[in-house]
Amino acid sequence: MKLGRLNHVGVATPLITDSIAFYRDTMSATAIGEPFDLPAQGVKVCFVDTPNTQIELIEPLGEGSPIHGFLAKHPGGGQHHLCYEVEDILIAKTWFEGRGVRVLGEPRIGAHGTLVLFLHPKDTGGVLTELMEAPQH
Ligand SMILES: CC[C@@H](C(=O)O)C(=O)SCCNC(=O)CCNC(=O)[C@H](O)C(C)(C)COP(=O)(O)OP(=O)(O)OC[C@H]1O[C@@H](n2cnc3c(N)ncnc32)[C@H](O)[C@@H]1OP(=O)(O)O
Ligand SMILES: [Co+2]
Image (cartoon, rainbow, N blue to C red; front, side):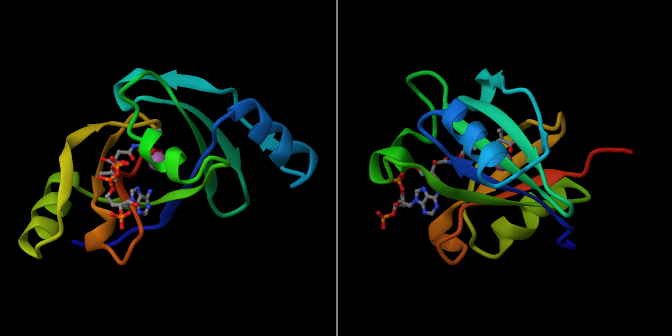
């Protein structure tokens, strides 16, 4: 298993429109995508492009959203996860499971249209870690 590039930093927000305005007007981000719903992941998503990575703004979508608990603890939002690219998600899953790192569920299609999975923050130094298969260019 080889750890790839940092694909994005996930930032949870209670109101994605406010966060978009902040990144546009205060952070001076010039490449901000359109927000879209990802019901399979329980979030509304908007990507903010920076020169070397992306900020992934995520707002809860639906009652079962996985970020409700995080926002209950951090009502104003905050840094939620780091996402690294890997070549093969199933090889990565086996690698981390073999080292006692809890893998949260099975791989699912993420916001970039490739398979993603999450590692439990208590097994990764307190950082919720997402792995994603790199998009084909
Ligand atoms: C946009 C789609 C996709 C993409 O393609 O990029 C995404 O990024 S979707 C992002 C949202 N999806 C997920 O986060 C899925 C995986 N997450 C989960 O399964 C859960 O959120 C969780 C990580 C298991 C946490 O569950 P929750 O019920 O909120 O809390 P717990 O009480 O079980 O938490 C246990 C423990 O972990 C701490 N915690 C929770 N979230 C985080 C976090 N983001 N970063 C660091 N630590 C976190 C929580 O505080 C608890 O610790 P203690 O308080 O010490 O007990
Ligand atoms: Co993500």
